[in-house]
Image (cartoon, rainbow, N blue to C red; front, top):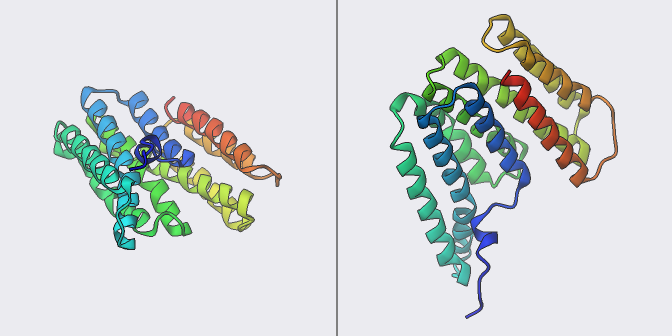
Length: 238
C-alpha cells in the first residue's frame, strides 16, 4: 500500500480561508478576551479544519471509489468535529447564537465548494461570526458583537471582490461600490459609538488600496491582503 502524506489531508491549502478565520478571532480576543472566548477559538479552528478532509472524503464517495486517503480523511473529519463539539459545549448558549446564525452560510459555501461568487462570499462572511461569539462570551454587548460581525463581514466581502477583480478582471465598479458601502457601514456604526473611528479609517484604507488599477501576481495580491487584514484588525480593535 502506498504511503499517504498526512499534512495535505489535515490542513486546508487555501491561505485566504485562513485569513478570513484569523481576522475575526484576533478582533474578538483583542476586544473582549475571556476563557469562554478561548474555547470558541479552539472550536472554530477544529470546525474549520474539519471541512477539508470531509470534502475530500465526500468527493471520494461520490466517485464510488475508496482511495488510501479516504479512510484517513474520514477519521480526520470525525476527530476535528469531536474536538469542535467538546470545545463548544464549554460555552453558554448565548455566545453560540452568532455561530448558529452563520451556519447556513457555511453550508452554502461547503455545498458549492467555494467556486461561485455567492459561495465564496458566504464562506468569507460566515467566519466573521466568530468575532461576535467571542465578544459575547467576553461580556460585550450584543450591539457591539453585531457591529464587529458587520465590520468583518464587510471586510471579507470587499476582499473577495478586490481579489477577483485584480486576478480575474471582474467588475471594478461593483468592487469599488462595495468598498464605498463598507465605509458607509463603518461610519454609521462609529456614529452610534458601537465601534471607534479606527473602523472608519480601516475601511478608507481598504478603499484607497482598491482605487489604483495595478497588475499584480496572485502571490502579490495575497501578501498585500494579509498585510491589510492585519492593519484592519488593529484599527477595528482600537
